[in-house]
Image 1 (cartoon, one colour):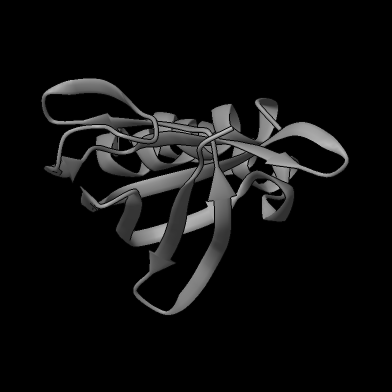
Image 2: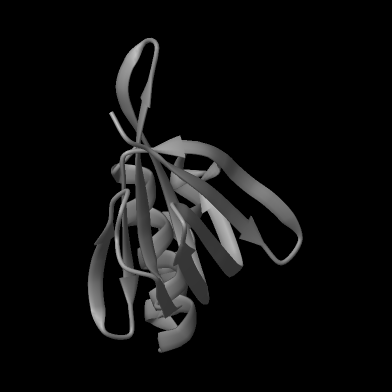
Length: 126
């Protein structure tokens, strides 16, 4: 099976790197799925979940991350996701994210509310 190489990088660290059969991300143009052989692409990431479908010796799995802004670039079966902030779903403290969501709602802080919603949804999609 053909695969693409994926690099998910945040401003402060490399979040995930590996081979995948499909990556789904939210861009300013809408949700996009990238598979091996996709046309070259450059897009702006919207806050949302990125799902990376991996295929390894142990079978197919997936990696989910919460991404808050950035860019994606695809060419020659190499996908780079360069995010301002990115967290793997497994790294997210769900209780803390839910508290942040409630606090943002009570303070009418729409930006903080959006960030917390993305984190809660990504954690639920593990």
